[in-house]
Length: 291
Image (cartoon, rainbow, N blue to C red; front, side, top):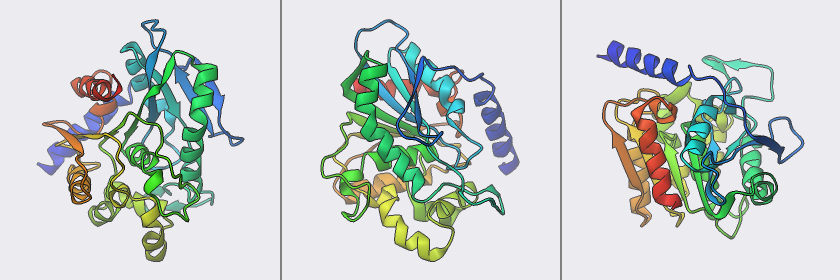
């Protein structure tokens, strides 16, 4: 059974990554670093005003994975009538080394600096570069590590007040749709998700993990008061569905209801694969919050 599950996940990954990258309609910078950019996709139906989906790609916060692999999903959503902003951010390590399982995951604090800066800059950037986007109907969508970042972006007002990204006013979001998110860092480390990527993101040692986790772990940043839905494959072997359950439980303990849509016989990658039925479910979940 484990071999069968691994083979299924590999086939799903191959399908998701088989689509050519879709060029954006325009790219805009939100900072000076080459990774501080947003790709904008206009709604393909010609709508004069459309909900804005802010998309955050996954890839375990590791440098080899960039926003290009999420561009087919962005195009899929644009063809469904959404305006889309595909956010890039700094990943990997600023140091020239690798961990035991390959490239080091994430940069502290740059990964979070970038996501916060992107969300702060998006209203003005969208108004300039994507005037069809409706700033009153914004939904953050992230996959895997990007799901963690989407949940985190919606929780900046419940960060510890000494955090550089703390804001007293919630980010102006209609909601969050997190796709197989790394939503509970303690459980992710316990299960060895993505080769210990969450631990690497927070510094790679126990002391850093303990000190930084309150500033980064979505399961500790509740309640947000922002409508949130998780979409999760039951057959996901990359980010097990136990993490979605743990986040939903943590939300409930904090007095907040989080929607969780579990998809039977679906793994990690169909959620971002326009050729998969699961992708249509994702679009519908976004529409439920956006419209």
